[in-house]
Length: 72
Image (cartoon, rainbow, N blue to C red; front, side):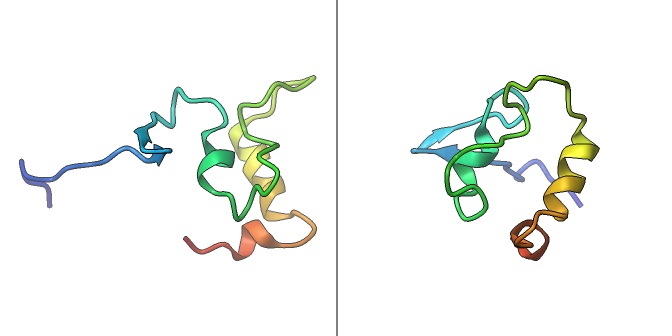
């Protein structure tokens, strides 16, 4: 149930609110436990386009299982 008092806060990087729909590489900057080298973000430049579903499917299958086990 929503009320006028509900407030949704943007996630922050170094104290600055970010818009997850417009900020490139926000995932690798906010979830360091999963992206220790800050690489392989969904919006990184690639030789071919990768769709959201395909990207997340392969994260779930990643060899060490870290994305599948992450509960946060």
